[in-house]
Amino acid sequence: MTYLHPGDPGFEDEAAGFQTAFRHEAKVIAAVENADDVRAAVRHAREQGLPVSVQATGHGFTTPATGMLISTRRRRGVRVDPVTRTAWIEAGARWQDVLAETGAHGLAPLSGSGPGVGAVSYALGGGVGLLARRHGFAADHVRRVELVTYDGELIDVTAESEPDLFWALRGGRNGFGVVTGIEIALFPVATIYGGGMYFGPELLSEVLRGFREWTDTVPEELTSSLGMVPMPDVPGVPEPLRGKHIAHLRVAYCGAPDEGERLVAPLRELGPRLMERFAEIPYADAARTIFSEPDTPHGYYGDTALLSDLPPGISDRIVELAGPDAPIGLVTEVRHLGGALSRPPAVPNAVSHREARYQLMALSGPGEDAHAAQERVFAEVEPWTLGRALNFAYGERSTSRAFHSPEVERRLAELRRAR
Image 1 (tube, rainbow, N blue to C red):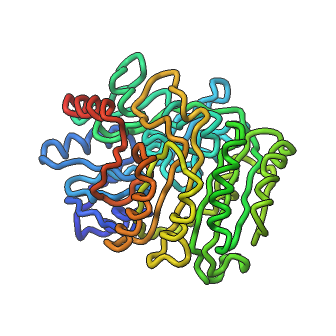
Image 2 (cartoon, rainbow, N blue to C red):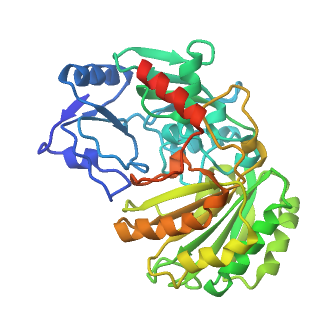
């Protein structure tokens, strides 16, 4: 393990993450190599009276560390057991690390749309991925958590050994210690049928309305989302999309390709496409192929609203506030929820708002004007808002949208005080 202090060579690089809009103000960084290093770092922080923060990839970093920052980025090990269909994931592993190992066995984790995202924090924060409507939240399929408590003890957390803590970590995520690894369930999915359609700015409202109506007709084996994205006019962006505020409709179907084709066919009636690509895809490549999210560090600010419904009449207003004529450039996305996401897991956890049918996300560069623009979008759907998603909160803000139901939040607070 290496301790780094402000001014030391490598300190700034170690503190940097994917999110560049915020900067850590840590007094010391512990660059850990193994669980014993984490124990030593936590004990050192306790002796020095320093609060502890943790960073693997820094995708969801919103609150700057002010005491000790434990950097787990070197702990990227993954072990797959194809017999039990499980994987052990170290704290710094990214989904791309996991997919490289699971794909060789024809197995799939409940990974999300960004291969570079830290797998552990994603899973413990809930996790709505490509197989979500078929298998539920990633947190529902965490089998075991290895945790260093704030006393510096290394413990195994399971439903049998620590039932309250196991409940809290899966969906509550923060405030219980430093997670050094998790065991997750895997699923026998080698390929999926998926891809997307791109529509021009003149069709945003029609596509949003059509997407909402179409989601009423699809089975839970199909997970989808609609992103409305202002594409930059730069080399590297496909020419048909360059400089346009496009609608990108994404589909992941874990079933036969011919049935997937039948399910997506009605979407072509929404209008002419700028681009379209659907195919049977190896699961390990699916997120990058379907979503094509940026993988270069940048600054962003965003939040979500989990919705009981998305009334058709709201489409025009969302496009007015977040489309090509809006004063602030926003990326908005509607994710179709429901299916297995709406059902309680075999072992209860802290994930809340399972009754939500849609998730609305607004994302932009940082700044007060951007924050205000996002909140205007969320205000339009307030009557249908149940809460917000922990994994998609980028930037501290004051909002009435809670991550958890009141009873779950009370229990989490009690358990955090007891730690």
